[in-house]
Length: 115
Length: 119
Image (tube, rainbow over all chains, first blue to last red; front, side, top):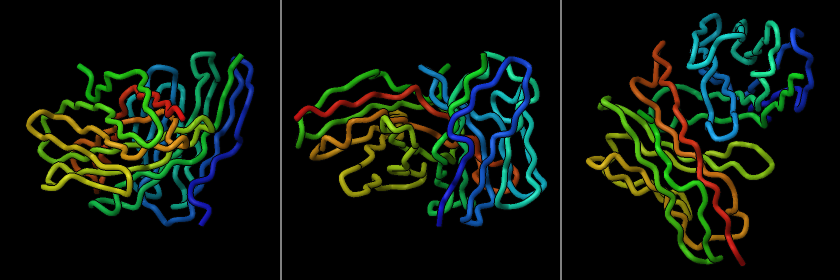
């Protein structure tokens, strides 16, 4: 298993540009989520999905869109990039509920710089 | 109020010694989960250990153990026999509420503790 993969690893955008951060997992996990990590603030939840076709907002959803057309993929779209979106973005997935299934596994992250 | 508080921005430990990283949490839920993750300088998030709120025994995973004190709302990570490779940022996180169906169970992270292991 490749686990959770993210592309690109690093991206530079200009203010106002749009882009999509890709996330895929090959573990057949139902639950997927996107976090951003900023210095001194830990990780904060942007959006999450509990299955194909079902998404919802997390703690900091403004400026981001998600969709979940398949179990494997959960892309994050930046509609109009702003410098405040400069951050490291992590995608995570987990199988379900219960002790053995609720642990979240993270991708390697995407470093985004918005100029 | 902070949901997860890690009061130690940085910790130092001598190789082969044990170290405790502090974590306190705040929730009114009866069902919740507590996690510790390690983030080395390479940036990935590595799951270390999990404790459920109804677990009666402290969780252990190899050299990692979680000192769970429910009444005090603390979930400290204990690393025994520290190794140089343990130098990293460590995050405590909590899942509140249901962890299934459409509730998802949002994971809230603390701000992290940087651990440095000296030879």
